[in-house]
Length: 91
Image 1 (cartoon, helix red, strand yellow):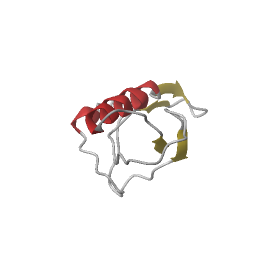
Image 2: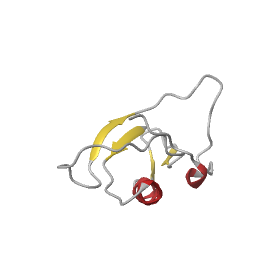
Image 3: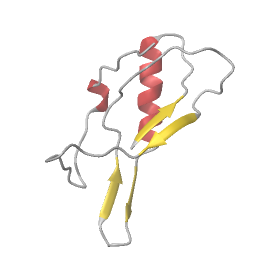
């Protein structure tokens, strides 16, 4: 799932650290209706962008399930390293 959050920070590195913390807070696991273990994990950061003021820090502004590329699959105990992400800026 791809999600967008508003992060208030003094600089790019602080924004990245806060985004990693926020993403890890959203990690969860549960057993679905088919009895399968589902784990939501932060895989990485895609983009950090500077936007205008007046918005509340940490607010999720967009969320959408992301389809895996053909041939890609992850086990329930897959380990990701989001700290190694190098997010870009789109603005």
